[in-house]
Length: 283
Length: 357
Image (tube, rainbow over all chains, first blue to last red; front, side, top):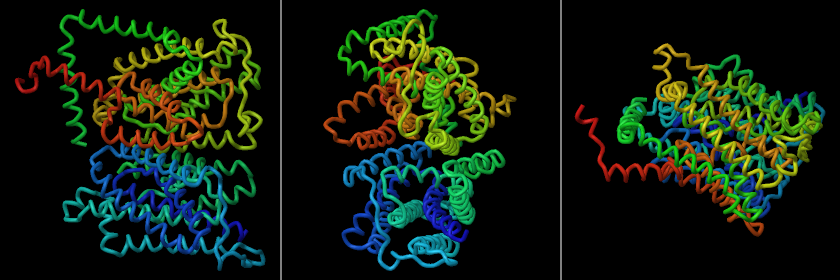
């Protein structure tokens, strides 16, 4: 049971990191970034190559940093000029971007799935209540929860975080109050891209690295974001861990069918609380 | 909100000016109909021009993808709702047809009718949950529903029905209009069928768009609250529109199954929904025939650019989507149409209805 709980936590905390990145861009401009999954996959492949060539720890530092920089530049160079467009048009533009990134990965790494061993201090296993458990998964849990808490406290306690929260409520009003919302958007894009990078690097030694991993997890992360309620980090955290728990216990008790649980959860939430979801998303 | 209504007001005035130009007396509308009937007739003759079997195969594929795109674009054009889950109806209809004929041993006609009936039933059920949401929320929910069915079809438990990753070879029994499996896999025969379906779908969607119901949909798109304020129900019309669009996607799916007589899980994947969306946007989902042209560009482009094992197709598509959305969001057909209207207006300036009133 403890093992299952830990597996759920590991999977859930990865989902949380991804969902946070999605929710932040979404909260600010109402834009759903279809490229998020592709960035995650790209980071996983980069982590694979960097780990084989130099070190996993270098990848964990540089990949998110570089992606954050890319996010900042993409927002300043492209999205800034498209902000007046309908969010759905921007979403389709990001869909095009996802196709481009996916194809670049195929051109560089090919379509073959890759596997990466856990990095040095965490390549063994530890005993959890008498059962051996891979220590890398514990590291994933601790690291991603630390990142999530870091982002949450940045939003809660820093001045910039205050501005982000205000802008998520009402972008125009925040701009009127004297906040440089263009810069704010760029910073949020940077953080969001960086989070996709963190999740991608973390997942590389945890699961198989493949081309379709991004598209697959994007839909699950989307469900986490929707079920948890956008803009609410606590809600996303609970939804991510709960979904991880349902999925992992389902894998044991109802093999196969459990792959459907995220969708069932979403549909049930949709039936029980339709206005809640739609209302939160649209504002 | 104010921005969009001002935009639409301007658009409406422009539309009035445009139709005022064309309207005097009615007879001037008729040449347009002659042209349209002529185009439909010429369409049946396409195999005379497109002679190679591979080229014919391409135009059949383009027609099927185009019909699918027409279904997806209908929701965008009339309601501004972008679905990313219509593979559910395209692939669902294809698989239902395949399962009814292969496992159920049904003849083509009952299998086809059951598959399309199933699409309508599922669209009603799914739609009744979905159509309360709008905007990006609707898109995300359609994506989730589509992935639900895609995942379901790939499970080991449903393998006996769907064939899982191995795919489903469709065994067809009996005939449809005297045609058998052999005829359906022949691109020349299939083109005639597809073109007939294209004509019917275009006509049906056009009539729906012009009807009072179509106007109601557009009113909902522009200002749902006001429509409700006027005393109209806005839930049911949107649901009906959703079912219509799903049915068109389902018809395309059945055509796909008839033509290929083999199905793989790809037809249910969200990338299939994405392709329909891409061809609609590239061709122009605000025009009647845009998705068809988009599908033709997509299919022919794919055949020309993907050769010799090089796999850069996605890159081109991605760039094309970005370029079209950023610089010509009306799509290829839409932009050309706008250009044409602008040129004609320059030649004979319309009566300035706006300023004199």
